Image (cartoon, rainbow, N blue to C red):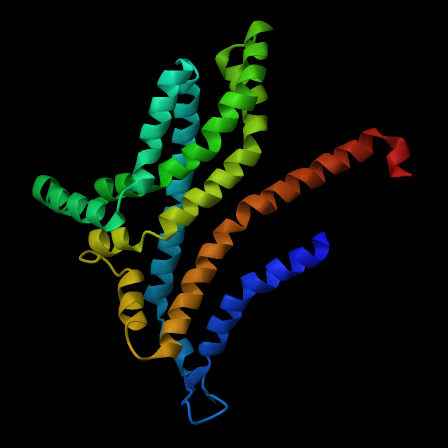
Length: 266
């Protein structure tokens, strides 16, 4: 039953991607014709600058996700020193950015940065990315930190471990699964904030979101499919990193267990 459900979920998840891939080869598909007119012309619409812009967006999103996760760990550890009621208020405050309208915040920050900082928009852009990405990392890290990791942390302190020893040898190993999930969500949020890139980088360098938006609003469905496919694929690659790292860690643990258990080797 579980296997069948997994197959159904996988098929439903791949159908949109397959549909997009099909349209990248379709130049015309009139309603009067049963079969589409196939062509590969749309695949040549992207140039080297477009791929560089995509790679930059993916790398930047990964950096933002890493910083968001690090901040979430630091904030979570700080909240452990507060009472539960006060910590709950701060928890709601840190999750609040996820409820704000992105366009309003981006427009306001962009106008404010232009008036105050002039042409230097790199720092406010990074802060804005982190502003929207951090709540997701915090929401996935803080609850297990307080509920599950903190009691073990207190035991380590009781046994005489200092703060650094407790973090690296007790907290961090327990945090790894949650950090992987938090990274995936934070990266997804940052990678999807194309409005920030369009407003803060459009005047200084080529960005992928601007021509993509222009193409998506046009009549060329093949070009729209190509832009959408590449944008999706570049996002998926980074999302697969945490699960891949988890599998590598599990394989290493399995090898160590086999090496230490002669009966298991047999």
